Length: 358
Image (cartoon, rainbow, N blue to C red; front, top):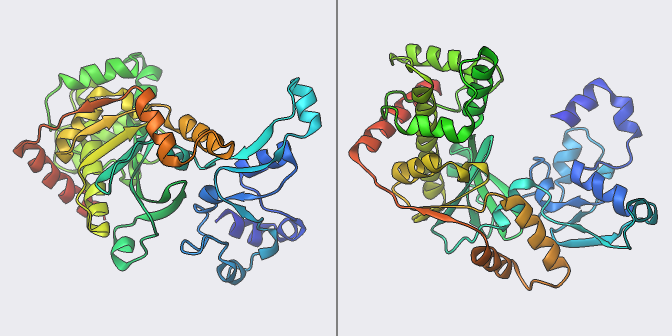
């Protein structure tokens, strides 16, 4: 959409362009002088052929975009060259290689998850959440389109995933409470207050349009409750509990869609990112999905970046070896599910709510 806006509003700028570089590719160009497009990030542009992993030139041309500005693509763990002397001298370092890892943050994060077998799914949860599975080839079917899943590139195959709200609602509520002086609790304290609040008092659709932009989130949540014939949360703990339980239900729905699209039976959920620090969220996800949740590593993106660099340098033989190293060294916690009819009833409420929004 940004390129189309440039085409329509500033055509002279687009006509003058020589090379299109995504932000990580631009950094690599500045450091090495080599202009390339790294595959995992390019796969999110909607201008890459998911099957052949090359630029979809026909589509690019049909959009009236100059195909010649799209750079050659490289896979993750590619050594682009060595750092330019000016940068090395300025930093006071010797000549070092410049390596393209999986430059998409979720692509790097998934590379660090010790996924075992086709039954393993992942949730990369921070402000937003990516719920997915790893597949060897893109899944491009009517069912995948109906489920609104996307095929994105990874080091270990294709990341088949859904974009879902993460802890954004909690973060926006915290900002609102701090502005009004209602609360200065940190996230751990907010989670503790949620854990002792009544369960299933409020069910939300976290991906509803009114929750996607900044503002007075507690007021919006209260309004959403009234609009769906629910009682607005009485306090901060009840608000946060409603958010976290609703997120767990949204992740259950996403995992159900992925299982349907792939024909797999999911048996484990790996949770990485900042959400892995939230024990209450992790347990809610386990209970809502009736699947064990393995939380950690928190800094999966950084570890996945490191794995790609070590593969490029020959220090690791494969992605599997890198994931094994993470499993042996990273701190991870397993949450055992405690499914119940109450969670199933809450899920039915969630699905009805989501259907009404659609």
